[in-house]
Image (cartoon, rainbow, N blue to C red; front, side):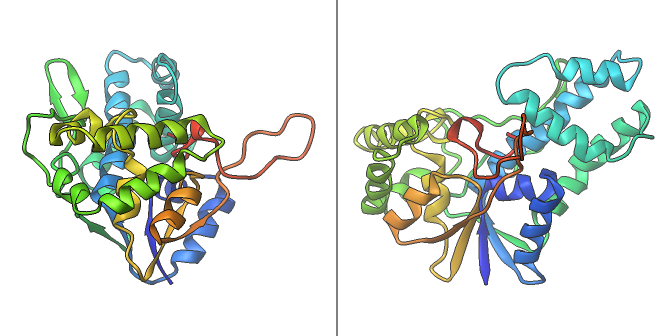
Length: 275
């Protein structure tokens, strides 16, 4: 079977608990699969962006404990993203701060791209101009330039969506029926933006949380002979609405409290694996 991996599948494949990593690997086997530059953009924002944060945290740090303390100083899902990448880099208990810096730099040069594209072809329906970018270092430190402006012409996102209006609206309307608030917001914002000028489909309205749903754009590039692989519940609504096949696997489990650990895909508030 040929799979088409969304962002959560990539993150769980390389940063999830062992049983989830094993399940994904057993599905992928030795075959060639696919993903998209929409997914690559999200992967880089999360993984490359967190590696940049780690390199910034290393500056003036005297120990790994100092680095970990700095990485905790953030809000929302950013801390989880940083810890995911930190664990991917450290791997063992004998990593020094100097070795962590070497690993982070090496990962940004080659490793992250190698594991993202392992048995996976990157499809580029919208010719995203952010996805090919690399982390940069300037006077303010390390960062991934993961944004663009409405006025920039660095992609074909507008024509990509305008060529598929029925599928976009079908997916958005399906999301409106979700019990999850974030799914409903995605559906509402997608419908709202699609009825406005072309500029409303670009910039933050493409990559941001209040624009045309990124999950919809991702699903639209899933081939007829492929199955979208995800841990995200939104695709339970999006994929049937546009006629795409999908399989949702259980994500890494939450720590149990007073009983067995529970399994199941994350709610929208915790989607993107360790995002």
